[in-house]
Image (cartoon, rainbow, N blue to C red; front, top):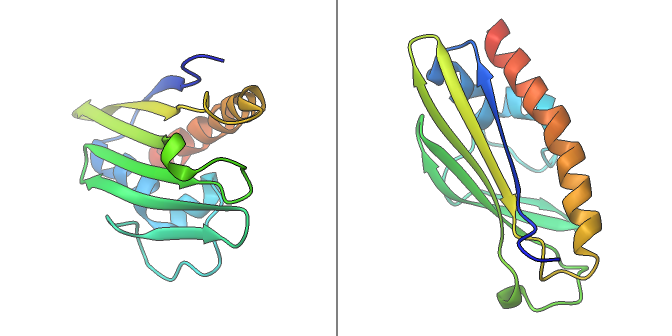
Length: 140
């Protein structure tokens, strides 16, 4: 599988500040994605590590307020040296007034064994997550 990157977008009827809060504040993040119980912070910041023991680890590598959130994924159970793959969860925001465009780019899963399964699972995750993010931001 070549270039197994999931890309999507959604328009949200809420100011960029509210969408950013939903993406980064733990109280909202927990409602649209899994957050390890060990995470004690109130919001994600660059350098944070989210670890699900033995399963996966996400590191926040970019956190530009109201613009971009990027997290790198490490999969300890995958029989592949981490230097051989680069899986990034990227969230890009742009907006004007009470409208925000949220763009997603997740991958590249292609170097992984069983890349199609990861790719397909990510599509399922994103279809649900983007709607929850939209609802949470619009209801704030």
